[in-house]
Image 1 (tube, chains in turn cyan, purple):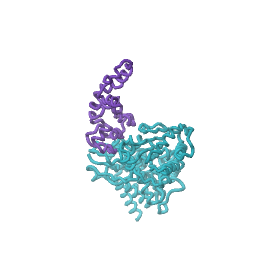
Image 2 (cartoon, helix red, strand yellow):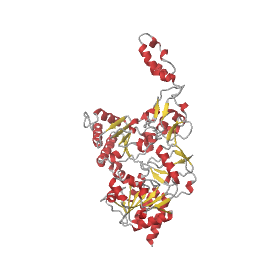
Image 3 (spheres, helix red, strand yellow):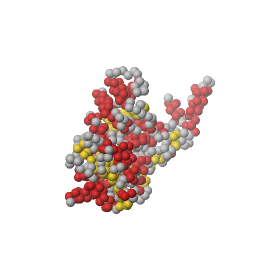
Image 4 (tube, helix red, strand yellow):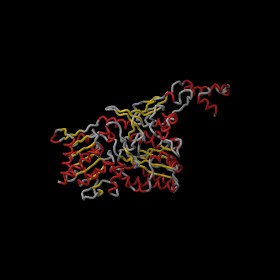
Length: 429
Length: 127
C-alpha cells in the first residue's frame, strides 16, 4: 500500500493508501467516490485523441492532436479557455499564461457561484480558519444549504463532526450540529438541530436568529414556518458555542438571493463575534480545485472572476458573464480542460457550447469528451501524482507519487505546457 | 443507578433485585426482563452492514470507541489503515473486520449503537 492524495472532491484526502495494480485497485480509507475515481483513473491511463471533423471520427496521434489544437486556437478570433477545476495549480497557471498568449477569455466552473461568494465581503471579515482548526475547536457546526453526506462523504468524519480535537475531546459528543436545508437530507441524521425551511427562506431565518441573539425583537411567532422555539433553540446553541463554523453551500449561493443571503450570514457571524465568540464561514464546494482557480486568478486581478486577456492584460469580465457569452455564441473556439462542461453548464450556455467548435483535454468520459470536435484524452492527475491542488479551505495539498506509472505518465500540465510552447513558436513565425 | 448499570452490562438480571420479586411488582419485573432479554441472550453483536447503501464516509470508523482505542489516529478523523479496528473502509465501502471486538459482544455486552446512530445512509443496522 502506498500513500496517495485523492482528488475526487474538494476535501483532497491525504490520509489514505492504495495498492494499485495494472487494472486493479485496493484502497484503505477512500470513500466510495474516491475509490471509484481512482479505479477509473488507473483503468484509463492511456493517451488517445479523436477528431470528429467532416462527420466522422478519426483517431490521431498525440502530436497530431496537439498540432490540430494549436491550429484551431491560433485561428480563433475570440477563444475561451474553460474548465480547470480538476487541474493542478501548476496547470491552471500555465492555462492563464496560454490565455494571455492567445488573448483569450479564461474562466472556470468556479464562476458559477463560488467566485461570487469568495468575492463577497463575507470573506473580508477575517475568516482565517481551516479544516484542522475546525476539527480541533469547532463546537457548533452549521451546515446551511449544504449536504456533505452526498457531495463530500468524509467531511463529517474527517474534520467537522466526529473527530476528537483539542477543545472537543469527545468528538461528536462535544459538538452541536445543525443542518438547515429546504428538504430532509441525509446530513440531518447526525444533527441536533434539523431545520427545514421553504426555498428562499434563508434570509428570514437568518434575520430571526440575529434578532434573537441581539435581543432586539423577542421571538414569539413562527418564522418561515418554523416555530419560535425551534429558532430560539438554535440561537441559544449559537450563543453557547465558543467556536461556530457555518458551512454554506449552493443552497445559499445559487438560490437567487446570493447577495442578501451572504450579507445576512456575515451579519450573523459579526453578531456572534460581538458576543465574544469565534465564528467563521467556509464554503462547501465539491470540485477538487475550484479554490486553486480562484487563488491563481486573484493573483492576476484583484477579484477572482473570469479574466479577459484581449487587451493583453488580464481584465475581469464585467459586462457579460462567460455563460451569457456562450449562450449567445460569442466564442468561436472553446478549449475545455479537465471538466465535463456540457454536463454541468446551465441549459442555454450548454446549448451554446454544443454549437461551438470545442476542444476537450481531460480524462475519458462524459458528454464533452464525446461531443467535442477534438478530444485529447489523458490520464487524471491522480495517476502522475505530481503537482499541487488547493483544498476547499485554501490549504495547498501536494499530490503524492506512487508506483511505476509515476515515471512515464504524461499529465495535464505536461500537455498544456507543450501546447503553449507550440503556439508560442507558431505565433513567432 | 448502580444496579441499573450492572443490569445494562449484563452482570446481574432483573431477578437479582429483591424488591422486584415482591408481590405487586410482577408487571415491572416482566417489563425489565423483556427489556434486557436481548442483552442476556446475545451471543453475536447483531450489527449488519449493507454494503450497497454504504458510501464509505467512515463515520462508523471514527465514532466507534473500540477503533479509537486500538488505532488512535482514527479518533482524530484519520482513515483506519491497520487490521485491528472493528470497522475499516476498504475499496470505498466500510467493512466489519473484527466483529469480535465490538462492545456488544460478551463479556461487555454493552448496548452500544453508536455506529448505527451516526450512519447517515442507514447502511448499519443493529437488530
